[in-house]
Image (cartoon, rainbow, N blue to C red; front, side, top):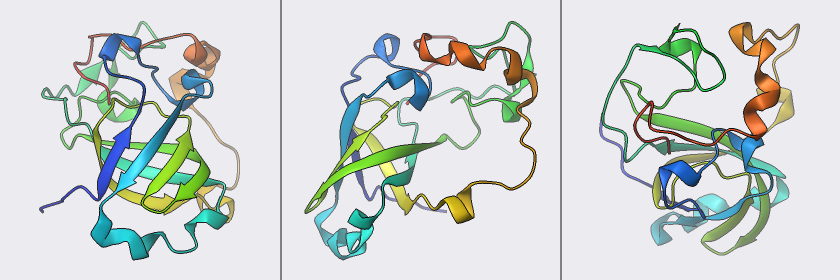
Length: 161
């Protein structure tokens, strides 16, 4: 596999210790997507959507850990039961509000990644496709999810884009 960035995420977060852990912790942090010029045609009709799913590369992440203590818990969990960035394939995913589309620049809200993060893909958020049916369970996170708005990044997992 060989992936090339389709653009870059520009955010106000230049340092790991100043950035939020997930979009709910950002409040209304705004950023922008700068798409490569050769991909401009791919943005046609995207401005009709209120939200986009962005898939990106944790470009500052170097270590892999299969067991982690997540930021909202004191117990060790398997990596795949968390959103920790220290993954075998350092790929991140966020749902962002699409505020405005200006040519190759998309103004977005809810950014939770480091500035200059390489963007791998953009997909429109479609509730019919993306919102699962049935009862939703969030495992160990049920008891501490409300804390996400106050927690900031730290060095336990290395970089967190």
